[in-house]
Image (cartoon, rainbow, N blue to C red; front, side, top):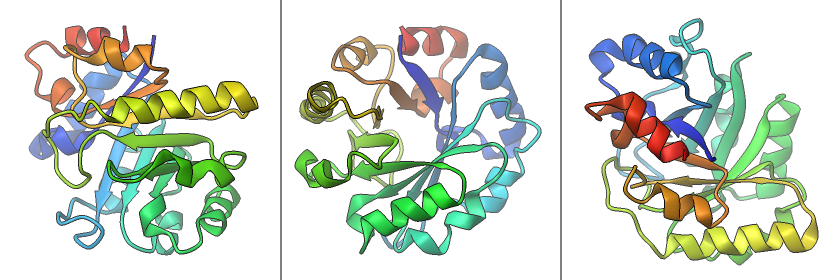
Length: 214
């Protein structure tokens, strides 16, 4: 069974609190917070104030995904008692080791994400410090995209590497995963599945969540 982290990017922002309460009551593991700055990715989503407005409503930890340039500038803004992971992009960091330290010093677990075109080997030198690797299975910056099956090779690489080296980190996947392909994704070694539209726009959210988790 994988853990699930529904992305609020796909929720109805006119009733965001209600949507978040609903999926938390059904049974999710994390709430995925997609932050876009219009620079690292073309779109702009929201800042930390939207996430903090869910404090007291969300009953699961925040899984914060910073799709932004120079993420060190804003790490502190997303630290709350409810924040477990802060994930930055390898491609957006000038000194990834320093950024990972910054996240740890802020009291959170550090995640690092890679885009579809980035080779998994770029993280080899950082695996001892990373708590979670987020593999993008779509191009970051847009919701509702089609799953890229070649991302599964990266999941297999990171799963094999942690078994060979005994390094402990979680593997997360984000983009285009739903009930139809979740089993294949889980079988590759994925620990956490991010799902946006597949959860928040489902006619039966409970059934969708159960099918994705396995």
